[in-house]
Image 1: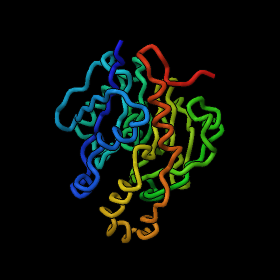
Image 2: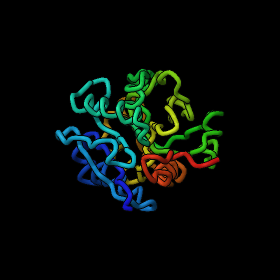
Image 3: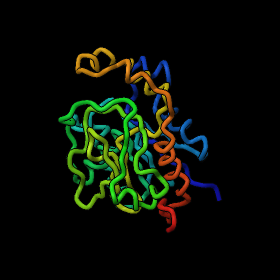
Image 4: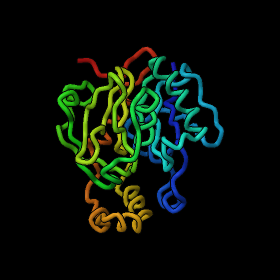
Length: 248
């Protein structure tokens, strides 16, 4: 029997200079998942496209965005309602950046501007004790590099959620909400080319905020372990009845 498609919920579009240079989120995830190929169903709520019934897909990835969760945009709020239903239906879910914040918000967490300011560039993510013992992360090193670009953060996780990782600037880099759902603040789908375009697009604002833009543009590696989390998540999705968590 054919596998059900993996849903990619694309939360808006990048600024035009970024999109012209490196494409949009659907292309980034498609390329990132080349090592774990399966059919992708891309839905764009900001265009009014309807999300499918949870039974029609094997799992869902919720992408990053240049919008803010706290803006409560209609298309974002309708996606939030779908995510609440999908979570209770035990559909495998992985939120990324904006998707991380939206999923945390849906389940009772607090999302707002990070009081430490914008986090951007290649940063170090550190696993907590729970993260080290998490089945999806057990093969990860305790510290790994990841690409980040965000102004808002999950300041308080939802009740019962496990904090699996943090960074120097953000206390909630990976959250697990249950056996089928987790989210990451960093971008496992990013390449150096995408990160470079994001930095260049915000260069003036970053300099004004005190960031060393030249240092941020010195990207000499692709974050292997950040990408591996995405691949491991997808590799464990076989059907609606299977958890993506690997067996102990």
